[in-house]
Amino acid sequence: MHSGISLLAVVGSALLLAGTVIAAEKSVVGIVIDFSPREAVKGKRLFSIDREGRPYAVKENEIVYEGDTINFAEGANPNDTFVEILVAADKVIKLKPPKGELPAQEWSLLQVLWPRLASAYRWINSPSSDESKLENALSRGDDNALSVLPNLRRPLVISDASDKPLWLGWSGGIPPFTLTVAAQGKQLSQTVVCANTKPAECVREATIQIGRADGDIQLALTSGDHTTWTQMVARKPIAWKADLADVAPLGKLGPFLRATDLLDRGHGEFVLESARELAPVSSSYPPARSMLNQIRDGQIP
Image (cartoon, rainbow, N blue to C red; front, side):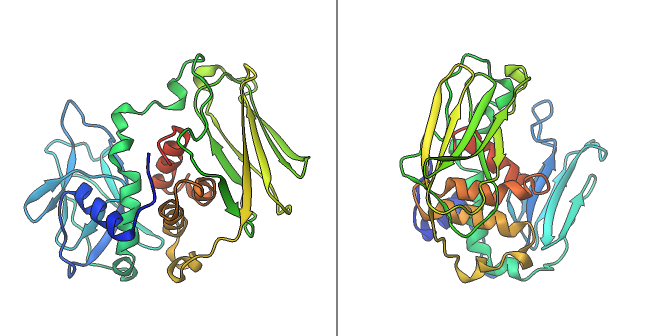
């Protein structure tokens, strides 16, 4: 389970995970946002980051620096092997075999954002999110108990100013699922998930509109076996620091950094608001989708 810690500890943890300490004067060139294949092929990784003569694994939200290169294994197929790197707000380069040369720094703001990028790296690549142990919702049987944010220990908080839909993911349970939103004793909306879907094919998540109704809301999720999870959600002001107040110049990276900033702030109480930031960009920014998967699988918070 993740917990809120100081920014200094976050950065230190991220560096430890990355396996190396980068000199402050090195320019940040970009961020790895996607790669394929995700797993080793016949026990062999098809690419790595060469940093000062040492190989490092390619991971989501990996920070790459001037002087780094992407090394592809001999014989890697350029038709299905690639590493995508965000190098500017709306610019992604796709590196393929046989060479993976990185450009010079194009977006100086990456240098300023380095502490936030390091924190985001920690969240998406924490040791507690070992991909080999993940169970995708599609692979679960129908005999698992319903589990929604199992590690949550604080009341949930969402912004009272945002009108973005809420996203909720869960594991276990038996379809169909009914998600209800109520405020002040009045039902605001009700969504049925996997009404005509086999348990093994059910994607256990929902996006719901809640509008800007005053006051706190209550979420209730009921499984097909009548097991129910309920949670009160408080609406409160959420103030952004200057560098995240306006995310438009940051492109899709902006919502992702907002989401990880929320996770850094507390002990999981902002996870729904974090998912609220991630969901709109999850189809076009792979690390956002990965974070939602971890929330759904109970690894975050």
